[in-house]
Image (cartoon, protein in one colour):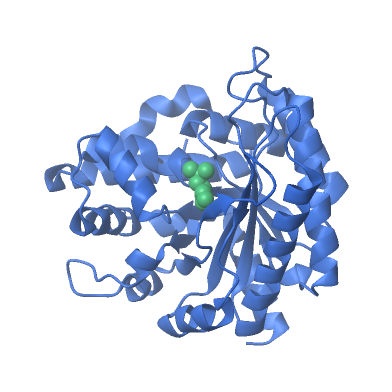
Length: 347
Ligand code: 13P
């Protein structure tokens, strides 16, 4: 795959106001979310849940790509098709989470580094052979008065840049996810400062590591107050802080920026993305879209509860949240229309 082909795939991931759905939770995280709802934590139920999502009728109208995990990309659906062939059939690009999770960063108590660079090229080549078109790697940055340290920011930024180049070398579009966590009592300006620091560091390392900016997608957090901060800002303040932070740090050559939801409700994530588009329409050089996990999945997971007889209702909820996210890209999301939830109509 040449550079132009890769850049075309990256552009297509944000075309037609579409975004990504992240269904790449590790087995442990998926099991924890299942356990909270009394769903059996078996490989079969994880497969059934992910099959339900990607077979949601009409999903392709708002979703361009789905991020799978290693377990899912090797599983077959109930009809004996691989997830990759199923996604290909419905016109959604298959992607794969390729980091190996986080560990404590040595010498930096309370901070994390993402593992998985050793042997990555060979693993990516296997995923490309299976049919993945893009990959994802998540770095995690915790915030308090002393964190993140410079060492943590630099180590994660360099790992993300090295991962991105390796992806491009084997013909996969890298989705680069430096996540500044919402946990904590920090305020919004502190989140902006930390987000700006990690993005600046990433693009510096991306330059050194020869990442092709035209052939990557950035997956950042929105700039938000910490969950325990007394001062929770309104959507206008969040939109201004987030887009200004991105305008200061993300080169115009990057085709797409797709937000993670990070634990925001679907309604809040949609409302905030919508406000960004209303306030910055025509002023942003990249496609500003979504790559939501919980903000698309959570209401549907609660409806499904592990029961196959509720699959259709759960799919209606998936379609609704994906449609709301797409409406937000158009500046057309209206929270008061959430009542239309299970009709499958965009908001
Ligand atoms: P959330 O939208 O739930 O944060 O998930 C996105 C993701 O890909 C996490 O790695």
